[in-house]
Image (cartoon, rainbow, N blue to C red; front, side, top):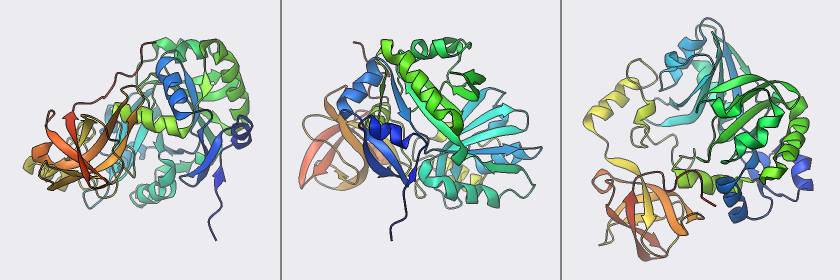
Length: 368
């Protein structure tokens, strides 16, 4: 018998709003309310709100909290000050990635880790096995709702709901306080769209209240609810990796272009072999490519040379709503990874030309 899908607190609200619901990472989630294209453009041009309460949150506290985080993550969490967040990953012992995550420093000896929904149990078990010093760990995923309000008008749309000057919160920083009448909300200037905006971590009992107040306050700014379909095209236009597609247990952070979050100033899981890999160089790299003409790349399509020799595979691909062209990410042999390199995407036996480009594909906001 299939495992029953989990639901987010506002599951009924999304259905009342006419959302098409789909299974995603074990949850019943809204994939779209109107159309992916309309929702994508709403976020690029104005402001939209995603319910991403399926994401996982762990609290790690106590005198050994930082030691544990340093041991299991690739980035250097000792650099975090109160009110700062950091992108990082959990390396495994065979050169791959257990998950990518955000590390928030709430206060001294008090951190929050935000992990992917599909990996909550996996990550909890992984981190726990390294917790030999007795850091206090608490899985607060089922008590926490998460709304991402994204787009160039996000700060204006939300400002009436808080005393905090939202526009003054630096990127990858956050404040904690009352928001829309709800206490203990983390207002974080982070997101997965590149369009600017905030992620709001809210105790579940206030989720409905906060959602309703945001919908009301955002109405004059064109705010709409946005589903996971547009979330995927938005993140792909920025070249943000999706766990399970572009990074996984078999991809090294160095192959995936995540050397910038892999700090060898400390020891962490598998750091010695990753350091050796950095010194030797990698044989394949994750690249971004733009189709030269027609053709939409899709996950697992082969990447080949003009002569048809396989050089890699597409990990994510779509038709970019902003560029009206096919865009993709994929791993290729390192000699084909330089921007400007010509590669070909094999679509149903035909080879379509594409060019390796630098990220992002588009700037985060779209001029109206």
